[in-house]
Each structure stands twice: as C-alpha cells, then as structure tokens.
Length: 453
Image (cartoon, rainbow, N blue to C red; front, side, top):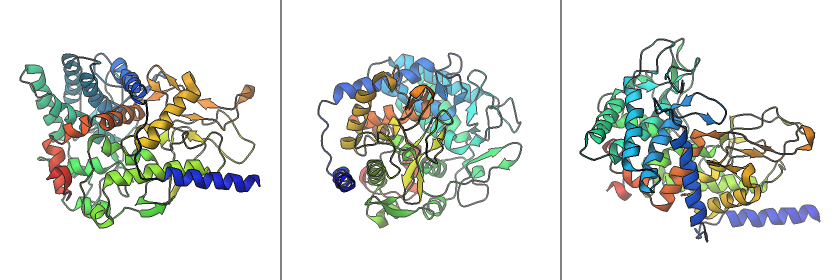
C-alpha cells in the first residue's frame, strides 16, 4: 500500500508541476528584492581593486573567472537601476575593468599573457591577469565576458569622457575577437585553444549555452564566421520528450539559461524553432519543468527532493567528503542535469538552477527559492544570497548527514541576479535589444518575428 501511495503522490506532483499556466507568486517581492541586493554584493564587493577582475569563487581563495567578470559587468548596471550604487560608481568600475582587458599582455606565449587573438583565458590571476596554469583560451567564457562588455557599451550612452571611453573600449575589445579563427576550418566552433597543443578536441555542437558565440561571431564586422554556421550548429540538436516536455534536450539547466541572460528569445524564431512551433524561451521553460519533474519523481531516492526542493545544473558538490552504504560516489564540481540522453545526479541541488530559470517559470522557481531559504536558513543563504549547492543524502563523519557548500560561484550568482531582473522589469533584455551587434547576429542567424520586427 505504501508503494502505491507514493506512486499516486508522485503522479499528482508530476501533473501539478507540468501545468503551463503561470500563477502569480504571492508576497514574493520583499524576498526577490533582498535576493537581488544580496547577490549584487558578491560582484560589487569582491572585484579586485586594481583590475576589476572577479573571483571564480569566494570565500575560498581563487583565480579570476572571465565569465564571472562578464556577469558582474551586467550586474553593475542592475545595481545602478536599483539604486544600490550610483551611475558614476558603476562607470568607474566598468572602465577600469575594460581597460585592464584592453591593455593586458596578449600573444601565443604559454605564460605571462591574458589572451590571444581577441580571446581570453578561462581563468586568470586576479591581480596580474596572467593565464592560470595550463587552462585553455576559452571561446564560451570569452563570449560571456563579451556580452557583459556589450551590455555596458549600450548602457553608458552619456557624453562625458568616461562613458565615451567605455563605449570605444568595448567596441575595440569586441572587434578584436577573431571568431573566424576559432572555427578552426570546421562548420562548428572550437571550445578552446592552448599554446602547447593548439585547438582542443571539442567543438560547440548540440544545444547548449553557445548560442551567444554564434550570434557574436555572425555579427562581427572584422572577423565574422560563415552564415552557414548557425544551420550547421542547429543540425546537431537533439529533440526529444522528457517527462512529458518536448524540447531541445540538454541536461544541466545552465545551458538553457546563459544565452537567455542577455537575449530575449520570446516570440523570435530561427528556422529550427519555427519548424518545431516553439521559440527558445519556451524551450527553456520546458527544460525547467522537466528538470523539476525528474527531481520530484526522484528515481534514485535521494533525500530532500520535492516539489520545491529541486534543480540540477553545473555546480559544486561534496566530492569525497562523505559516503553512502550503497554503490554511489559523490562528485565535486560537475555538470549535473537531467534530459532524455543525459542524467547526472548525485543528490546535489543548486539554487541557481531555479534562480536562473525564474523568467521561464516563475510559478515554480520562486516558491522553490523561498522554500530553500525558509527550510535551510543560514546554512544555505548567507551574506551574498544562496551559496552554491547542498546535498542532504551524504553521510559524513560525526553523524552529520548533509553537506552545504562553503563557497559562492560567480558563474552561478550571475544568472540569479540578471534573470531575476529580467523577470521583474525586463531591463537587461530591453537593453540588449538596442545593441547593434546582438541584433545583427540574430538576423544573420535567421531569427525573425517578435521584437526583431
């Protein structure tokens, strides 16, 4: 009887979470406002005072992540709009950051440089900006940095010397990126390059966060990629049904979020989505519902999963800090997720999974974030909002059967504050609709309809 009851309950929860109607979330504004302000603090407080670079993580000492800096540049604009900082404060910080990247040493040397051919290394030293160890020259992380840079180029439209210099420096940085070189003679873009060995053996194919790479590459006035690149990329998509959601599948939710942080895909379609009768926004909505439904169903039986405790994406994890009396290992940082051809799940939940999907499905994402804060308090929600991840299944020494991360990750904080703002005001989406490169890239990719008219 107990198994039948659990099955019935699971089915009820599944159908409940699968409803398409968006329901307003009562009394959420104070919570969302505090979440925005607290998350903003990560970016404003932790930037290096000399370079403007932002850490990959905190409080554990770390190198800088150029993607974290990209998210931070856009977060500063939200800070101005919400009154957390002044426009002049943001402009000063932004210009410092852009000038650092513009003036930093570049070249094909293995050390002592920040970038090469307009791209930058995935991780760099916080103060000096040198390549960290042997990391790759990263196409996607450069793309995320460039979207932050272009958001500042569009926002700072004043006639004063500082804002003019922001615009000019942003343009120089974008036009220096040799997107065509990164194609490495192939139809789809390389994920990266190393001076020791050349292009790495991985390309951007299959639906994921790389939409912005192709859009930026198509729009480049100096180093454009072939117009056929978008079609070549979309031909590698995997369309399928997962937990009753038909969508372009990709397991970790960050792949359904990152490009949407800056681009409003509502009502605009390329040839692929037009053939499926959806847009990319609706696709991300379906992926969010499928991710939640998987967690509610909880096929592996992890502790704590439920209708408001869910969310699989790339995040930290407990690693070897505990064990279970069953055959399972816990990952440290990894790309957790759930999709038709991809399931990676070790009981670790990341608040950014729901936070970065707020615009797609606020009726399930906001209650999840509220419940996480209410249930776990300062174990999970601290000075800068939600720490990166937690796991309630792990068994640790001393009888502690839970793990809460000690760190925040910049690339997980960014989607929370920006997507929260897009949900509430549409500010970043509306801003990027004015950026000529974003608009041009979308049109060259074949997008039509909606606001592009």
